[in-house]
Image 1 (cartoon, rainbow, N blue to C red):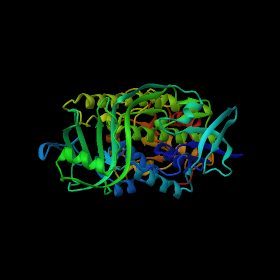
Image 2 (image 1 turned 30 degrees about the horizontal axis):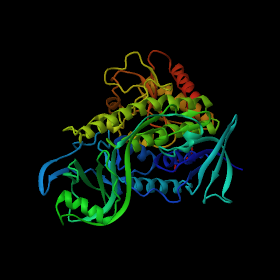
Image 3 (image 1 turned 30 degrees about the vertical axis):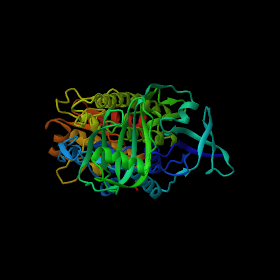
Image 4 (image 1 turned 135 degrees about the horizontal axis):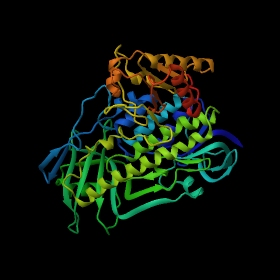
Length: 521
């Protein structure tokens, strides 16, 4: 029986991000996928600002930016007549705190391709054609029965310290451990998705036609040019009670002729199709013993608002560093309890947002296309009420970034970019003030003594620029500890106590939750 630290079941975005997180920390893992081929569709095509920050940390953002593009403006027609133009969200300029303020379009198949490339650079791979049939939990680990064309001999038992189900909305892992999937499937709210090639239509706009089916039901047909490709994503609602039509080139041509006018758009290729049903569900819990759920296995969304894939990435980013610390023996197993405590409330909130947007679309609300709610960007999602967040300043100030919040970027006084210093597997201690700097040096010296010189990276002398970005008053003496996933874990006044006492408070937090950093890749 092959044994590993973490067995990941499902190689979509969540599984790939988790594998990359474990690989760059030197944790043994296996990533298995029951399908024999990688996902080839565009389904989740929007990367929110926070996800782009995660991808920068993982070392894939340059590829994401090179192979994707901004969302185009929308153009609505009635026949050949343009009746409206606009955007789903007005573009924002980057700032010192938010370097990537706008959603970025990248079809899901390309996101998977880029993450697999990164995993390969880290020495990993996806085991295709390898599905999960059964699992057993024991006091010291998990046994999983794997089967399929990718398994030598057809079947094998695999052992792991922990197992993570990232195997989608129909999760086998979730079923095997008996976790309920609360919510609803709205069978009558369906749409066809297809990646097509077409001529006669420009790629500078997201094209929408208001049209009618044979029964006189009005519906919008949309063609969105997929950035970095030669294809469009077609979205075609299916009326309640109607049969889902077979999509082939003649049928697609017929649909587009009816919407845009005969001969205006010529369909020249069909790359992928899928039927979407409004599935709005969330797992009743994200953990059962040594088994965890992440991504669509834990929550499924309407595509409205582009939240599903992005929330999945955040799940894996939250869980990865915690699993690594526990598997490596650097943190107590209790640290893993914080995954559900932090991510389940966030997933519930995001599910509510995407459902409200979906309902607006079904109702035909005038603003149903708008995507300018800041919550959609996922920058203000955090863990203030979580078990790892300790806000210990007497008066942080009205503009302060608090423990549990996302750590914003900043341009430091010497020209250094803060995200460049945060990037990697370490924690980062930001010291603002003379007392805080003395405490930070003491923490760093202790880390060296423990044999992990990069366990904590200390940033001192950052000055006014960092204070502005973090809302720290000019006269405050403060320590801010940034977790490996870019959230503040501890915010501490130093002026009220000695530097050594402050350093010990930081060490206590580190002993509870952190693991040693690995060399950067």
